[in-house]
Length: 395
Image 1 (spheres, helix red, strand yellow):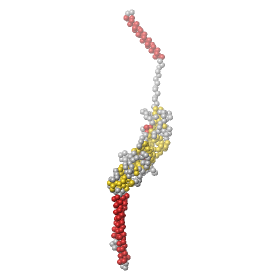
Image 2 (cartoon, helix red, strand yellow; image 1 turned 45 degrees about the horizontal axis):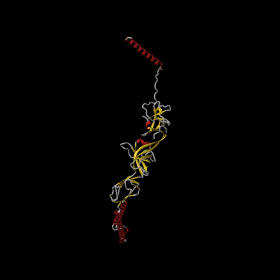
Image 3 (tube, helix red, strand yellow; image 1 turned 90 degrees about the vertical axis):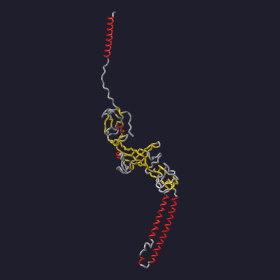
Image 4 (cartoon, one colour; image 1 turned 120 degrees about the vertical axis):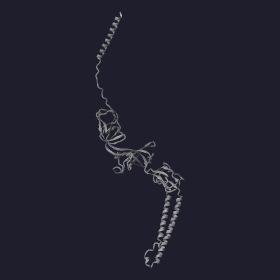
């Protein structure tokens, strides 16, 4: 077989293989079912929803402030001298009772002054007695001398009756008695007693030290009561009664004071007593004063200088609802999921907006589900799925 025939045979075989393959391909594709076009289902977004409860809601106003003493004074002597006694309570942080002697100044000089003052009083009493006797004798002489004359009907002249001498003697006695009272008072002032139950915040005196009049010796503050100044915005005062500032009568609003001290979380009860006289010019806030009785009765105490949180109990709203602040959308709207799983936009009335929650006075019904999560794309009436599990109302 020559080369030409071999070439023809190869071509024929190749064409046969190609034809066979094409035939097999046509047979296979002819038996395959035809694919139909279909539109994929639209995914339904999943949301978190809270089932709301309507009912009476107490408006609570939250604020913060620092504990201050109701009364704070400087212990200052009214007489000078050497300190001969200091109470064990007269130390930084020391506690004392009302009337307790905190410090004594050497009384010897003042006791001697009393002795001298009493001697001067005795001398003045004696001189007055002599002057009275002399005046009586002068009046009697006048009467005997002019008993038969017409002048006997009148009083003797003032000089004859020794009226100026009597007045001078009486004035001298009054002055000496005043000196005696002053000496007794100075002796009493050598004892410095506590004017109230309290504590010492600072002291700078000790035994043997010479102190002078008006020299500050210690700082004292009362533990009978404490005050907390809570700055609040003007709108917050609408919800509770401030005596002397907002309309109303009776005692101010009740307050719950809470703080962490000595590793413990403690609470105290207080009451709003007044507002400070003017608004803060920098912050435009109103300083409300909260009064707490017996702050040092607990252990640990409501210590002066402690930073605390105040929760003021305000008015009660009927048929109100509390929702998380995240559930409140722009323009005072919320997203409500109906019984068919559709999301509806709802406008509500916001009574009070807090840092973590909002109080809704109208616009929601009991048992409705409010969406608390966010969606990138949302439309009124869109279908949603509610995530399983119960939501919790904000605290």
